Amino acid sequence: MIIDVVKVILPAVLAFFVGIGITPYVAGFLYKHEMWKKKAGKLDRDGNATPIFDALHKEKEVGTPRMGGVVIWISAFIVVSLIWTLSHITPLEIFDKLDFMSRNQTWIPFAALLIGALVGLVDDWLEIKGSRDNIAGGLSAVKRLGVVGLIGFLVSVWFVFKLDVTSIGIPFFGPLEIGWLLIPLFTAVIIGIYSGGVIDGLDGLSGGVLASMFGAYAAIAFSLSQIDLAAFSATIAGAILAFLWFNIPPARFYMSETGSMALTIVLSIVALMTDSLGGGIGLFVLPIIAFPLVATAGSSAIQILSKRIRGKKVFLSAPLHHHFEAIGWPAYKVVMRYWVLSVIFAITGVIVALVG
Image (cartoon, rainbow, N blue to C red):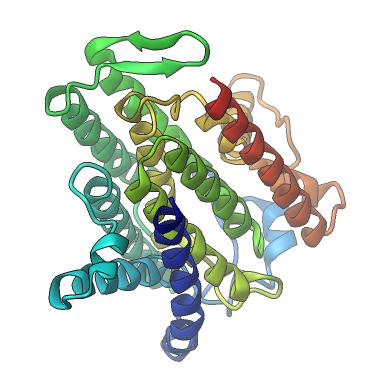
């Protein structure tokens, strides 16, 4: 039991300090090569200007690097690789016990982390390059959603046809058999959670809420005796906290797609792995634990539908956190209240998962 606790906590601590250590080099590279948008402002999904957002963020859009999310996945990669390597090249038994790379628990989320990070990195680069001439840049929303949907489809197909996972856990009810419908269900879930990644819009916001979510799933995985998955989730949380150290206002850099795409994809996959595969209800509690992401994606969808159907907006600015800015809340108040709520929802989700 003690070694399991160490196996979960130690990588998280290592990831935090690795992230703190590499950030000066990452930040130096980003500033040296001016990895930021060259023109302030953004366009909505219909290609229209966003004057309220532009007025609130015109001074932050230019001069602050993007791609800060590389701190997170590089830190996690270093820690995972270091412990795995030590377990294979040293005769010390302790490293074998600490190694949490396993085929049945961590290969899939680890691969998804790297794929999402690299696709997001490409999008960030194209956005930086494209913004030299205009506001728009990067991969289109359709292409990004297509990549995320494809990952969700492939992962769920693997679960259904390779691992024979054809049910989802329901609190106080047990597994609900849904067969191949798990494939479209999970594909929709991963797209929905990824859509909430636009929460990366204020200094410190995305880092704080995502750290709470991965911490919650580390606890859930540990309760299901999925120790390797718990260690992996805790490692991600530790790496996010290192990023957050430098993202607290005024942000030294932004997470952007290379971080948000990787993390939202992995969060969904971890939720799936703590469901029927582990004898839990990981998917059921995902909307609770990830409520800030759900609310963010939902507010954007409501705004889009309202403008197209009613010809008017519901929120002054979408997603929801920008609406709070628009009505006069200072950014730090929005961020800190989101942090508080994310912790509350994370704890609530863990409680439901434990008693359900």
